[in-house]
Image (cartoon, rainbow, N blue to C red; front, side, top):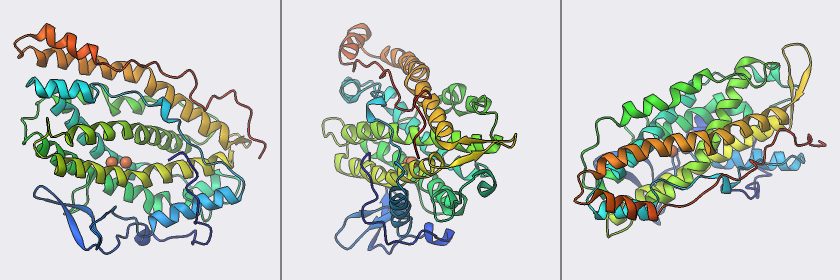
Length: 365
Ligand SMILES: [Fe+2]
Ligand SMILES: [Fe+2]
């Protein structure tokens, strides 16, 4: 994910219609998760092929190749910034083995709900970028955000028409592995209390640029960070649900999570490409001046990453722990179990630097 994905993209077209960016290839067989028909499918060799990547995958490679050919870096979020999972795989396994299933069911349900929230990306307002960016944007990922990229992303996450997406695939994986467990009734409510609603009150970091432009770039920075960090949750899910000691369908549940993981790659790639394209350009300010795109993109990523690795992580851990202690009360020895659980915790301190520090000197480009 951090190495340049531009290899081989140099001869590909740079402009695509919305229909092209949303087009599936032909599949030999469709994907079913339990009784639900899902997106994507299998080729003649039986390998999974992600949905809507027939043109979208080569398109992203082409835009990345162009960025590289123009001498601009492709930005990347350092994986060491990714907070560990709480509970981690060993802790989750302990809980399941001890019959305390609620925290794991809750965690898997939250992942499914967050995937479904991904559909809001199609409602993000995209201002007239050619008026707000000094350099031309034809033939870039930026020029295709509204023309297919956001819509493909939304469909991948939340499903589309008769096809399930990641939301339904995670629910199916949970139900296969844990045999359709009872889902705690307060999952969504607890999430709403601490979740995306708050994000709306974000204060402008760059009041000199168009408000919609900052909101767009801030959302993209936030979603990119969430997508990169989700890799940790997906790795957690795949390892846990593939474990025959705790999973009723290690093969089926584990495979579903692995398909979801491969679908995420285009999300990370188009978002970091479009943000890199902005970072390589100059933004017009509302007072008639300009601002280097790099300082805006880096400033937004820095703020997002600081928040996600510090306050946000503490809040989430606190909330999870609260419901965990509650769930353990049904165990014969709650104190003993909590002690064993805590002994398995992954110790972690967020890295000092995000890699997008605003004090870094602007690129010579
Ligand atoms: Fe997803
Ligand atoms: Fe995603």
